[in-house]
Image (tube, rainbow, N blue to C red):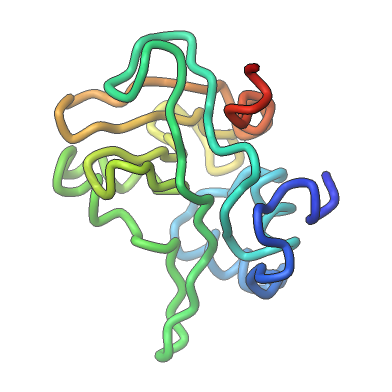
Length: 165
């Protein structure tokens, strides 16, 4: 895993790292295993703003012809009552997909401020240990668009505008 100073935009303001115990508690609650690299990121900083804030895609999205911009990578939130959840939970996808939302976990907001997001997609996973693909969801479309085969692929597709010059 990269050094925290090479991944997060504001490493001096990063969130506290996440413990293995909270990750395990989260996975038991949702019955899905979080991708290993996502866990490693959360153990560096429990969410934050990545330096590379665009994701290359192989298809046109509502955002652009070849990428999706992201605002942040979500961490796991601990509520005052001790409950845990992914930031913003699945509220967004439940509004769009209904019952299928239980197999989608929001991991990134996009600059549209609510009309599109990036999610872990467990719908095609056969067991709790299968790694999900990564999808872009837009409220204008009813179907998610696959943007990465897995979380490693997602991380490898991240770039910043200056890298394209």
